[in-house]
Length: 203
Image (tube, rainbow, N blue to C red; front, side, top):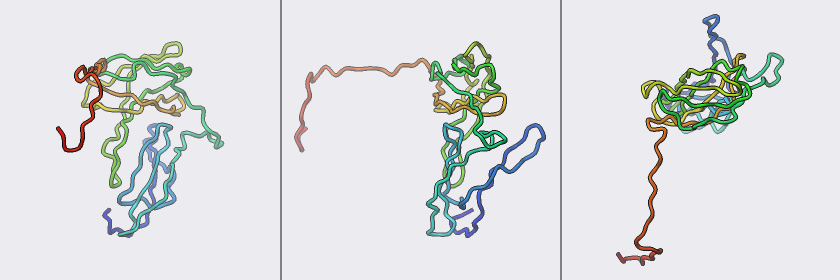
């Protein structure tokens, strides 16, 4: 769509059912989201939706939070979510091991990285989901980082745990790096030994 589009269609969210190979409605938003709209996945697994340009010179000021149905039980109550206690280290290397402590280790079906979004003009250029291999121990998941930068380019990701009922945790941010043990250099200014004031126009 372009900024002259006068359509007022609402965003329709769909969920893919892997068991039946079908798509189903997951609800629709209350306000039109057309050109210049954005949608970003938040760490709590909800989606922040904003913006929209229904007609030239008119912009949608309302912000909405989309809460996916898999965060609820069939009776509408909040589903029990797995939790992340710690991630160590929080800089993840390619093909290297790291650990996630969680009281729900025995009930985790998936460990995934979700690239933090870069949304503009109704398109998200960065979002990708990367499944990670892991083994479960007592209160801990032993996880292996993504295989290479083609699968997961370096940068910051949301780390989610998903339990056997398909319910995600609240995410923690981790960094994927080609040099996960690299330490920034440190330095000390020795000359001049104290602060120096420079007047305007002087060198």
